[in-house]
Picture 1 (cartoon, rainbow, N blue to C red):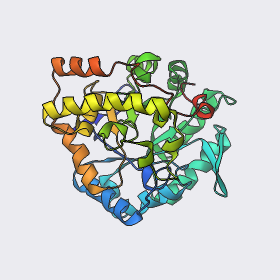
Picture 2: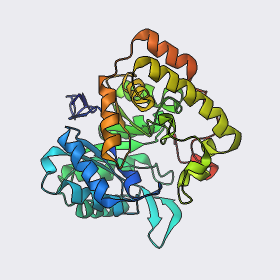
Picture 3: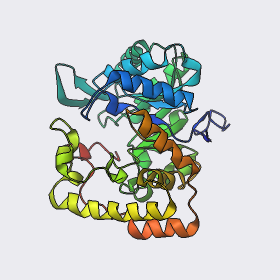
Picture 4: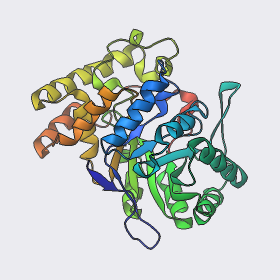
Length: 335
């Protein structure tokens, strides 16, 4: 397994080593149809067997169910896993469609205690603020997170979908090890909105979620009808109407490039993300062992300068059509 360093510690020393490819566990419990806890647990354990260490979850996935699932999967294998979880998006278990955001210090402490219990661990390796609460100064939220580090309940801190300015303010309170953001061939926001520049200025790693474009870049999705009725992608702008047809043409070109390279489209897309810098880690999600093995094959795909240029010609930063979230959720990113 290839490893990469995650940010820096207090004093500027290198942060922890994690696998270059992690495992996003969200879809095992929520948002995508076809839940199968037995196969999902087997997939997490297979990942650990293959040397993958970084497991990504959040309290809002389910809500709460995904942390419990991960906890079951790592029982007896805590030393093999680097556990990242998140707080900040508040959902009502009785009506999961409702959303709120909280960065209040009291909530930070309460959320952490809940995650520790559900995961069955004494310490969370990486604790993210899932979305920035604009009603609470980031200094107050990160200050509360820093107290969790002092108490031994959390090892490292992260932010998700925070703007460059917010990252700098947060890092001044306590070192931020990682920024999590959607980043892939069809979502290049961190490269264009100042996120990645701020991270590199401060020595913060970028953890790329949805590096396969929510499955679209694999080439397996050919029609909106490929999604089950309860799959949230049915309501995502990039997967609708003319947007879908335009974006599918881009994926067809990626498939040709992958064929020429002798790898799958998923492997090419992941290799591209990893080629953006040694400070970038990708966390593709899957709930199937076979897909996990395919994704790990991306580690053997090396892209030269000419190949990266060819991919860039097919998929420049503004190539994809449609916002990555519905309008109601876009105000929560790059805050």
